[in-house]
Length: 207
Image 1 (spheres, rainbow, N blue to C red):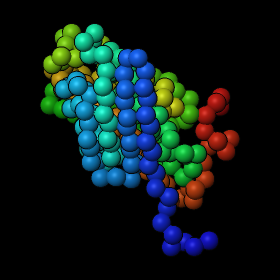
Image 2 (image 1 turned 120 degrees about the vertical axis):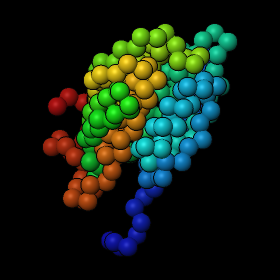
Image 3 (image 1 turned 180 degrees about the horizontal axis):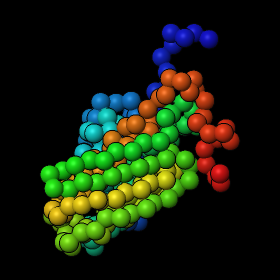
Image 4 (image 1 turned 90 degrees about the vertical axis):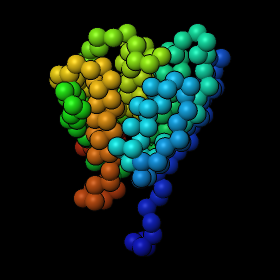
């Protein structure tokens, strides 16, 4: 084996088209945090840009959805497509650190994310808002995005705001904590030597 060969690029592209949305997304796990995001929902764009910048995962995502109805389908489907792209880029998940956790402050707010790239999707969401909207986006849709992302990516995801008052700060600290946790979890662990980090030899399914 030529040890001077570069590792395979961990990149993926996913397209999804339904009667409600048309979305294309690409990710590069070993990127620099470069992003090009356009969903038609300004606040969601801002959050996905934060996710890219602080995870160092390059993200390109373009969505066209039925925003004349509301933002639900575009928000949920963008989480699905981005999660699918992440899962595809990870491949068999050999050599990854697998676990990641981050606690992120934003002024008066403190949020925590812990995740396991396990192949077993699950979301625990302990985040509360005191406003119905941020910009044109319903705050209840943030949980829908995290749920869709966790399901499609195959990750166990715990999201919790420990304290905070400003709704903008609450959701932004959640996305930034997700970003930092993902950055740790997708990183290649040099001690794993390309081995899947599980005693089963594969990730996914029951323990």
